[in-house]
Image (cartoon, rainbow, N blue to C red; front, side):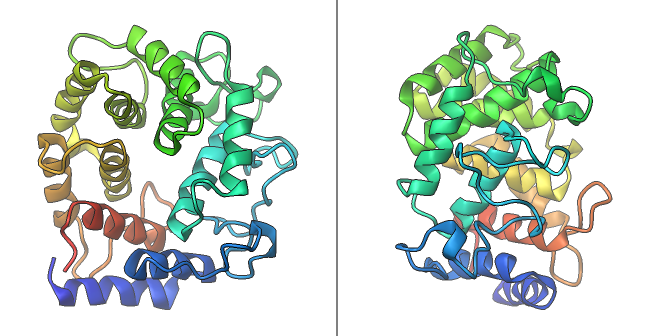
Length: 281
């Protein structure tokens, strides 16, 4: 990526992004958060209680979780993982009260067998990836929650239990009976806690599937794998990087995913993925 390419991507975010998205970009480029570390999320005018993809979404709840758009009075493990992603990109410390409360919430919602899923009473409103009682959704949520308890290091027992549960469902070819997102989150979790054989199986599977992924998912995959400790030279990451760069539009930014007008979010994620692989100028 050339300096001119970076400039075009940055200009797109600055012109079209919200205050929260521009705060994420600022932290990405400078390593300096646009709020005081002593401020709580609710007090931070820049973060609006952790910058959100949808800035009208509710603040962190008293139990440490966040509510999703599909259930505004409910604390969702899926929504909490998403908000942790944004908090991390804003520069919140992973040992801050916000993270500690959120990880405590996740740990309390983990089931005895090591998995996570949304509460049964949410079945009528939950989207497919969060549907209680569904194996694919359960594995995805377990991988996502397990990823966060692993990379923060705050709840190591929960991470190990989640990794073991996911391992039980792993096929010999590296596939899980779940969404592709569950694969890179699981691989990152396994790599992070030292289950290298499981991680390598799924990394091989992912390397063959990068052609099926949108720009946003490619960036998410790269970020998760690098956060999990997978080397940038891994074939899955290398293939994803090449495809991500190929999907950049002539105007310099990355396209929206799945019909959603979120090109700013995707562009920030793409830049972070390139940064984690040493590919930003």
